[in-house]
Image (cartoon, one colour):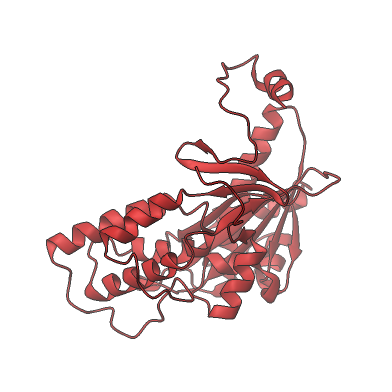
Length: 311
């Protein structure tokens, strides 16, 4: 592997080699990696989460089944005092650093981060709920696998939650995969207010395809070509992206419809996926226990293997 990477990159940049990826945990940029029978396992060091739980006195708390607390109409409770506000922001900052390795918590972290400027007592309660979920799932690890034979297709799955947050802003979610290996997840609050669920889904698809094209650009730098395929569970968004022009959606900005050019030129394929199979649901919605567990497993999260030597 070193020879292949050096051949691709060694001529254009200096490379510093770290330790060999093996059955023991190898730390890189604060995260830990190791080889396993089911693929490459990635995790945030358990000590990182344990320290965070300790800062909030939740080391021995009763865990929760899902990361998100169901809304109770209490968004307008009193604002946090300065000391609690600071602790809230610190906790959110630490959790945001873990979102790529813990996509099961990404949607809840994103929602809490939206309130970081003026958090309320209700937001504090939701943070505590998330930390209680974390206390029972510290050992979850993300498993990265590669399908064989490799078909060199970058696949995306996009989803949106229309007008789901404060200010009626929608949430975009997406995953990007290469040959069955999860490369990245995204959970973002949309910058503008979508006037329909179709528009929200198109914005989410835009965001996902932008990330896919970034991967494609990196691969081209390595002299490798790949096809782009994006999956959506919105039949209306699929139809809009596959035709030409605005149609009845004249309220939309034309810049949102660049996907039509990509499809027409054959640079992008858009496929329909059933809502129940859409793994990006995990990144946009506050789900119930069974649905959350099913999508957490589908995205590649597994419990730690007890026989692995901890470092």
